[in-house]
Amino acid sequence: MRNIIKNIQLSIDGTEMDFRLTKLDAFSGAELLRLLAKMPEASDSRELLAEMFVSMAPEDLRSVMISCLNHVGVLLPAGYQPIMQGSSWSWAELEHDTATCLKLTLEEALWTLRDFFGEGGLTSRPAEATSSRQPART
Image (cartoon, rainbow, N blue to C red; front, side):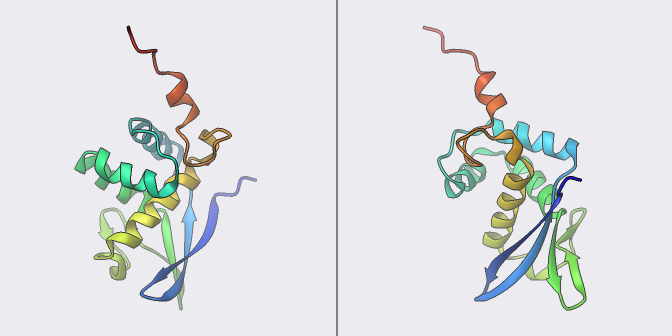
């Protein structure tokens, strides 16, 4: 059976917090891949995050963040709780924490799409996007 869950830790205000990522469904993953394929090439995840932030239209960035954060849960005393449900915050602690939300979005996106990236790793361009480009006309 496929592994669709990944646990990670991030520091929030100096406290290590546990998060659970659940892969996006196939339709959401395909849409995410389409949006990321439009972006310039990035050499590492920090550069990819910067490119995503500056290259995407505001509505696309919001859509990607909402879609990704809907698949992230935080470990609280009662168990894992969703970060977002739909476009509403379920864990208000992150509502004004831009850096953590962007990190979680990037982690979710890269993990969901890791199978689309070639030998260069998660931060190289998707193989389909680079091979489908037409050569420049001279």
